[in-house]
Image (cartoon, rainbow, N blue to C red; front, side, top):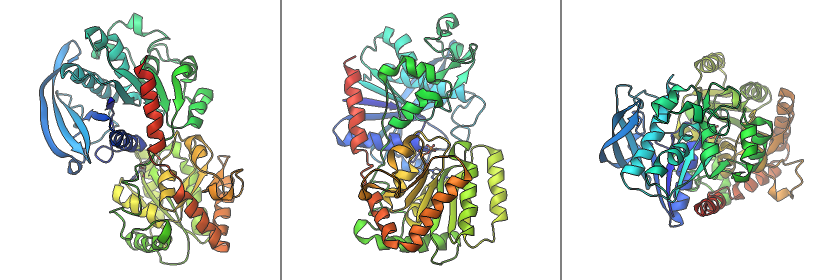
Length: 489
Ligand code: ADP
C-alpha cells in the first residue's frame, strides 16, 4: 500500500508531544511490513536538522493558491532515521515556519491551513496518488476538505483519508477569513452544521470538525478515550462524533522499541533488560549524578511531560511535596507552552533549589528524558484527561512503575497492583480514580510501602511492565485494517 502521512510533528526533528512519536513509530512499522510511506511536514526553522539525512530541494516551483494569489514554495526531501520526508518551505513574507517555534503564533490557524493546502497541492502537482492519506490533529483537519471539495474534481480520485485526533482540546476554531485564505470560499456552503461550522459558535469554522466530517475514517488514540470523547469529553465535538460514529474508533498508540528500549538505548550509560534489571540501578546513580541529587536508598519518582493544565499540574506538585516529605526523591522534566505556567514552575524550582531530594528541569530535553525513564523507580501521570499517554508506556519498558489516573489511554494500559481483576502477573502499576490530592497520596503511599516493605513484589511489578508488548506491532495492524477498509470505500 502507498500511504502518505501529513503531519505537523515528527520525532525527533519536530517534536512537541506524543503525536511526533506516533507518526515516527507508525511509519516505521508500516515500512517494515512492506508498505511505502512518505511523510509531509512543514520545513520549520527549528527542525532538528542533525537528524535529517540527505536534505535537498526535490521540487522547486510549487505555487500554492492562497488569498486569491499564489505563494511560491520549495519542497525539500530528506530522510529521518529511514523515514522518507518532504518538507514544505513557503517563500512568503509571513514566514509561516520561521518563527523559532512549532506552535504559539497568533496566526497558527493560517499557518497550518496553508501547510495543509500546500501538502495537497504538492501531492497533486507531483503526480502522487497515495491510496491512503493519514493526517493528524486539527492542523491537518482541512486536508480531506481540500481533497473532496477541490482536488477530487481535478482528478485525484484515488486517495482515501484517515484522520487521527490526538487531542480534542485543540480544534483550530477560527473565523470565516480562513475560507478566503484557502480559496475554499463559499461561506454559505461551509457554514453548515454538516460541514465546517463549529457546533457551539455559529460564526466560527472548526478545522478538526472538517477532519472528522470529511475523512473516510476517524481515530483517536485509545478505545477508552474514543468513548470518553463521544460521551462528554470531546470539548464540544460530542455531537459530531455521534453523527459520525460509524466511521470512528480508538487505537492505542504504540512505542517505537528501536528508540525506547533500555537494551539498546544509546542515551543511557548502562543498558539492561529483563534478565539484568539490576543494571537499572546504575542508571539511577547516573541520573542522580546528572541532576545533583543525593545518593541514598530512596525511590525516585519522576514526571516527564508537557507542563499543561491537562496533565494535572496541581497533582504533580502535590506528588512532589508528598514524595520529598515521605522518604522519596522527585524529578521533573517539563516544558511549559504557557509562559505563566512556566513562570510558576520556575519559582518552584528556585524555592526547591537547595533540596537534595528534588530536581526540576525546565525545557525540552529528549536525551535527559531517556535517562529519567531508565533511572527513576516510579513515574506519575495524574492527568485530568489523557487521550493515550506515552510516558506510562515508555516507563514500563524501562522497568519504571507508572502511577496514573484512570482516564483515557491510561486506563487502557495500566492495571493496578492491588485492585485489578487481572491475574497478578498482568498487573503493571498503580491506578487511582478521583482527581484529588488525597487519592494521589493514598496511591503513592501504596507504591512506597511496596518499594520499602516488599521489594520482591516491587521487582515483579517492574518486570510485569517490561514484559508487556506495547510496541507498534498490534496498533500497526489495527491501522492497516483501517486503511484496507477505507480503500474499498
Ligand atoms: P502529549 O502528547 O499530551 O504531550 P504523551 O504522553 O502522549 O503526551 O507524549 C509525550 C511525549 O513527549 C513522550 O515521548 C515524552 O517523553 C515527551 N516529552 C514531553 N515533554 C518532554 C520534555 N520536556 N523533554 C523531553 N521529552 C518530553
